[in-house]
Image 1 (cartoon, rainbow, N blue to C red):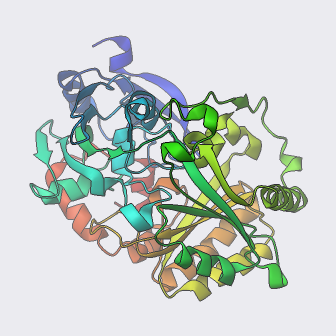
Image 2: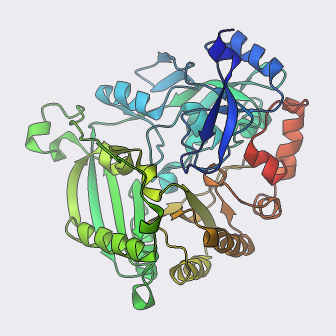
Length: 449
């Protein structure tokens, strides 16, 4: 093995920049190299591009998939893509949008690998219409803790497939997969922006737009009284060529150039407070009030608005930030209101809050989505925050909800077991795939997995 394959020690964190650990990082370019690494690894986890927010891809030893990123085949008739796990959503967009194909599910950033997308069973703005990422995987290959390679799918070795998809990397290293891409006619989105005065109005608007493929709402979690839950709802569909601006109609699949900014410094901690958060939320609401109505926009700012700002996580200061995302089942909207009201009166102020509607979840032990509403909040990491999030955990668990493990950095083992009742079944499957405990993360140790 080369020095890089054997592993070097480096400081690593998730995208939230908390926690930070010293880890040995190894890379591999083929299956034999990976098998050798696993034979020597005494507890570690696979890692893609490091966009999990918390500690789910952190361990004393991480195995990076960044060199394992070949696209192996593509059927231009069926849209079936066979690719290695280190290929990113950004890679797919660059290659396939000009050919008229789009990933079936994308998260809020394109800098996510296919292996990470499967391990977290990611969701997007279209979950209510198209489910999560795992629903579009037709098959994958997994290397387990003993170096065995297992072919599996939802129809063949389903137990292994359901442990790998949504399993947070704890079942083994995903090697490659066959993914169903979706056909599109342009690189543009027909977007509609609507301003809603309160939480009841935005919930009704989601229901009213249930047939629209993509939907997401920004919520002002600091507004109070009759403005509680005031929102900006953004919906969209892939645009047809005749809907595009005249200059783009000749080449509808060409993506217009995008200007990328960079956050040049880490924001000083004293600037991150309730006053600045309130100003930010008010400004965001005001700016979107000028964009309300229908427009046709390139797909990048619609799906990945923050990717246009390099190192945007620096905006949350030297202590980093926590993204807290939970989902509550249908019928528990009063609990959602309770959580928003609790946040609005707390000492911790979120700068960005996003609400989405989920359709039915997949029947896999650790997959996050279930039918209902999910709220994601970005909080600067401050001492008072952890107590608040403990309170929100209790409300979420009491009302049948759960926290997203891909975003988590501090959930307790007790609340995890309550939120994910199939954790014992997952642990039993994992013991078969990894009897020697080759795979674990800081998160899995904290949660008692």
